[in-house]
Length: 285
Image (cartoon, rainbow, N blue to C red; front, side):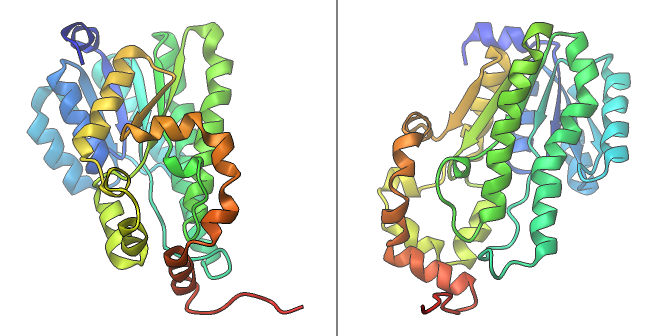
C-alpha cells in the first residue's frame, strides 16, 4: 500500500467478523497500523479480548455469534455506539466443516456451514448496513477460490462461498445509488489453522504435492490481510490472494470445461474415496 492509501484509512471505523484469529486478526493489526479504528467481532471471547488488549485504544472487542441474529445485531450497535459510526464492514467469519462427500456428510454439519458462511454474512451485512450507508461506506465479503473451481469433499463450503460471491454482486448493484461500494475477496490457499487442519488430516496433501509449488504452497495470513486492507482503502470491487487467483477469476468459464479431467485425477479420487468412508459409490446398471 502507498502512503496515500494509508492516509485514507486514518480515523476510519472498520468492523470485522471472525476477527480473533487468522486472517481477521492479521487484518485488524494492519488496519490499526494504518491509523484505522477497528471493531473486533468474534465468538471466541478469550482470543478476542487478548487481541483487543494487544491493539490498545485503536480497537475494541465485541463478542458476537454470526449464527445468532440478536448477537450480531447487538455487537454492531455496540460498535457504532463505541466509535460513533461504521465506515466499512468485513464479513470474514467462516468455517470449513468436515471433509466429507455429499453422500456421507451429516446434514446438520452442512447446515452449520450455511449458517456461518452464508447466512452469517447476510446477518452481518444487514446489521451494519444502516451505519455503512449513512457514511457512504464500504462492504467487503470474504469468498474463496472454491467459488470458482470444483471442490469435492467440501461441497458445502464451496457452495456457501459461491453464494457469498453472488450475494456480493447483487448487493453491489443494489447499493450503488446510495454511494456504498461492495467488494468480494477471493482467497486460495492461505496459511491458516483451518487450511493446515484440512491438509494434514486428509489426503489433500498428496493432491497438492502433484501441483506446481506456486499453487501448492499456502500464502501467509499477512498477505491475505494486506489485500483486504488495500481493498478497503481503494473500495475495490474484488481482491485476491495469492496472485494466481486473479488468473483463475479471469479464466473461470474455461476452467469449467475442465471438470471431467479433474474428476480423473488419481490422487483426488483417493481423497474422495477416503472421505466417503472408503465406499465405492458407483452404481451398476
